[in-house]
Structure formats: structure tokens, C-alpha cells
Length: 114
Length: 116
Image 1 (cartoon, rainbow over the protein chains, first blue to last red):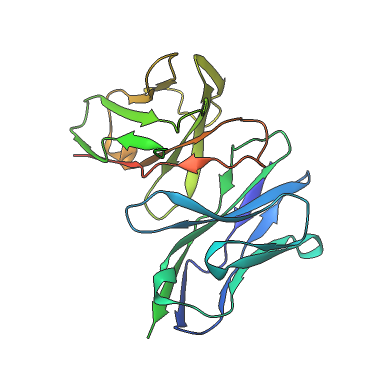
Image 2 (image 1 turned 90 degrees about the vertical axis):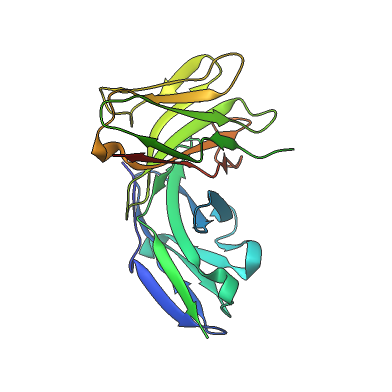
């Protein structure tokens, strides 16, 4: 069985500040990990994914995440927040053979303040 | 190339009625996934279908819920005799292949079902 825990259901940062959204996973097999962003009343858009290649993964909109097996973590970061980053962010996990049957975390709502 | 199309975007049903949610995958995609997002929760997998086949329905409630993906036409998620607890956003995702997460699944904008 796989699971994802996102610490902090709400995160607030100032524009220009570092964004750090936390994700820890549990998996008995090597995981594939994803970050998705959801804007209000929209579907999910893939930000980035880890599929056992480089542990530091760069995504769209300046986001990146680092896979740390020893910490079972896949935290999402962005050096400088922009107002347009305000959205809900979901971490998700699957595994080889799991296809796109994803297990999602409960999400983190990011607020960006002036 | 249009994205994943879901309709209706919003659906209101009275308790006991039936709800039909439609999902047209991206062109060339033959794999469809349905997810449900309850208020204040993440998305939960419901069912995975290929054309004319249900591959994995481990996330589907045992009663009242069914899904199909016919040879022609959209995938349909059907909820019979809806109850207030069915109120949620239902998302469909499609991919050209189902076995590799290296192949991205694209999500639709969802159908927001409200049961009154």
C-alpha cells in the first residue's frame, strides 16, 4: 500500500519569498512521485514528476522538488513566490505497474501575500 | 488538440435521482481514470478503464456507482439514487497508455455534483 502525507493544509508566504511545500510518502516498492497544481474550479496540472532518474526534478513555473529516499520525502520548492502561484498543490504517488492510478495527499493551499 | 472534456461542469441532483457524468479523453488516448474529490480532501481513485474494459475498479463504491468506456463515445460515470454524501468534484484523466507513469495523464476540469 502507498500513502502520501502533506504537512500543512495551508501555507502563506510573501511575494518574493521561498515557497516550501512538504510531502512525505510511504511505499513498500520504489515510488514514482508527482506534484500537481489546482487552480480554483480547474482540473489538475502536472508540475513535475520523479520517475527514478535524477533525484532533483525541475518542473514548470520555476518549481522543483528533491526526492530523498532516506527521509521518504519529496518536498516542493520555489525560490521566489509570485502572486500567480496561489493555488492548491497536491503530492501524489504511484509505482511501477501502477500506471496512472495515483494516491494523492490531502493538498496544501498556498496563499501569496503582497 | 482539445484537452480532456468533462460535462457537465456543474450538476445538481435531488436525492434519489441519477447522475451521469461524461468524460471525453484527449484524441488518441484510450485509457481513462476517474477520481473523486470530497470537500477538504485529496483526490481518491475510483476506476480505471480502457475502451470497452474495466481494468481496475478497486476504488468504486460497491453499490450505486458504475462506469463504462464504450468503443464509441465518451466514458460515463453513473451514480444511481444519489445521496448527499455523493456531493463532490469528479475528475477524469486520460492517457495514451496506462501502464507507465512515465506517460502523463491529463486531467479534465471536473464535474461538480451537488445533491440537494
